[in-house]
Amino acid sequence: MIQGSDPLNCEASLSALVAGEAMPITHHYVRNHFRIPALDPSTWRLAVGGLVERPLALSLGELHNMRSQRLVVTLECAGNGRSLLSPPVEGEPWGLGAVSTAEWAGVPLSDVLDRAGLKPEAHEVIFRGADGGSVGGHPGITHFERSLTLDEAREFQPLLADAMNGEPLPIQHGYPLRVIVPGWYGFASVKWLTEVEITDLTFSGYFQHERYFYEWEGNRQPAREPVTLQRVRALIIEPAADQELEPGDLTIRGLAWSGAAPIARVEVTIGDGPWEDAHLVGEATRRSWQWWETTTRVRHPGATTIRARATDLAGRTQPPRPEWNRLGYGANAIQEVAVRIR
Ligand SMILES: Nc1nc2c(c(=O)[nH]1)N[C@H]1C(S)=C(S)[C@@H](COP(=O)(O)O)O[C@H]1N2
Ligand SMILES: [Mo]
Image (cartoon, rainbow, N blue to C red; front, side):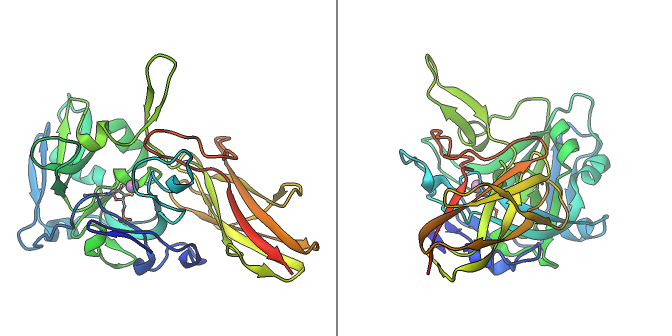
């Protein structure tokens, strides 16, 4: 479902989130702040500079010759579910489809940093995308750029990915190279990567400091906290909303994930019924989503709602209603799917 065409933004339809882990590339959501840059692979280089012993300018061929790693990773936009907030907030009005999973392949960031050699004062790594435009009344062009501290990079092991589901990275997903930061909301996974800069400072670029903060109205001054890991969430994929169902056995299926810890349990309730545990399918990791399913009996005809609630191993669970914040991030409230029993 296309949200906007310039820049291009499209949501995944929930029914396209098919069983299995990775989903077809054409169904993966797309989130762009600017126009897609066209980069020439023959002249493109990844510059690695700043506080390093040996600055690098790596060609695609040189990157292909380095050790490659494959990871199945779920990307979720921090604004996923924003349209459910009340009162409404600014920003892309995502439903629940700004999340997708793919198998990404590329060079571990740590291998590139080892090759460049970090100086002792190194504190953060800034990732710079080739795309940019004018934002927030700032003069000149602002690129899409984000940083991680080196501790965060050690913990989450970003990949510099040049392939998606075994194919070269499609242009809308960052060709020729993008960052993939498992567990984090999508903004950390910078596309169209051209530069990796090591600094001893705390980066304060527009997308680091003026966006991707939870901001609440405080008593005296507004409180703020950076948005980081994907919050725990379950999605119901089957049955679809507004479906008419036969009475009898009903199978309910969906996905669940959390960037903070693997999923511990998913519970499902119908109408005012009790919460019942669903069966978790596949491997539990905080890098990617997991399927769950349960079969239950529905008897009473009429309209009802199905709800699913995920809890992760860190004990985090979903609130009944989304927690409002000024920029509308992390809206991981329990999803409600309305159905009718015949
Ligand atoms: N260079 C660049 N990288 C970017 C963005 C962008 O606009 N420009 N959007 C970010 C955001 S907000 C998200 S949610 C993910 C989306 O990745 P996808 O389009 O491959 O699904 O890319 C991130 N990386
Ligand atoms: Mo995003």
